Image 1: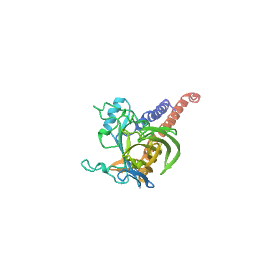
Image 2 (image 1 turned 90 degrees about the horizontal axis):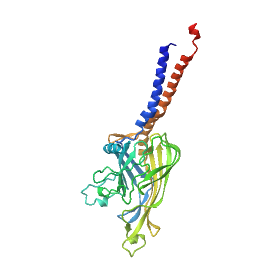
Image 3 (image 1 turned 60 degrees about the vertical axis):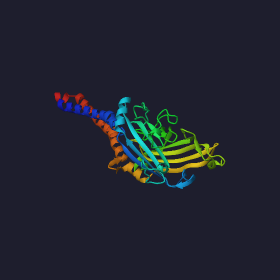
Image 4 (image 1 turned 90 degrees about the vertical axis):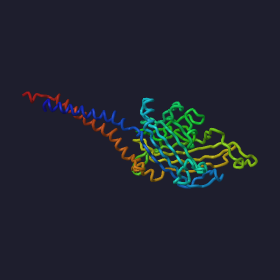
Length: 360
């Protein structure tokens, strides 16, 4: 084989080694980021009726519960905050509504009975996350001139939003809406909106959902007092104090949260929570505020695995996304490196082999 052929082999070998390096250290990190314009909807339902304390009737009631979560990315805020922090971030506004009406809608601004039509539970948050790891990033600019900061609230009123540094909210921490790309079989810290802090969530094994490999994580949120801006008071009769118009009580809460994670993308494919919240008086549980097991419905899990179009936008489809990312992050670098090294080895071998026959 002549010098020209050996040069071609050498050039091809260098090319494929370069492809391996570019795919591993440039293409994969570029693609392994959460999309800043993401919009996602999830629906969770109770398998059996949950027990909730209904304020209107002042009674514990068995009800079927539906919880809907909406997540919307704020691209403008992500670009602004990313430049300020000099890192890739995503900004998501989330709203979780839980009610016994699966088709609940907030009443209009001018509805006279707006407060009476409030859902059983409502939490709205703005979170700033690292685009690669999914970990919460503290972002609390001067609220007088910049409203892009993270917050949490249980009402629709802007003035009720709690920002980092407020008495009952120090800021988001840990993982919030997703796990890291390339999720590992280890313990992470995951955010709990009720107690407004992160708790350990442990890897508990592998399984499959609709043919997709997922990691199962379980978080035990210990029984704790729910932070309140002002002392929580109820009519004395509800806790055995009939002669007192109102008494100060504590709201206690605990939760067993189970998440099934697609490990390549870090996406939450399925979630389930076993919540128990009580109203305590003098250290004793007097009222069951919530006792329910609620988890993603079958349609949400299927959408997360196979993908679907919601309001003209594609959502979910993490089986395909994981395959594409795994191809770019593992197979392309591996095969390109092997082929490149073989070509380089062949070029070197041909250059060094004995030439006695040709000289003769």
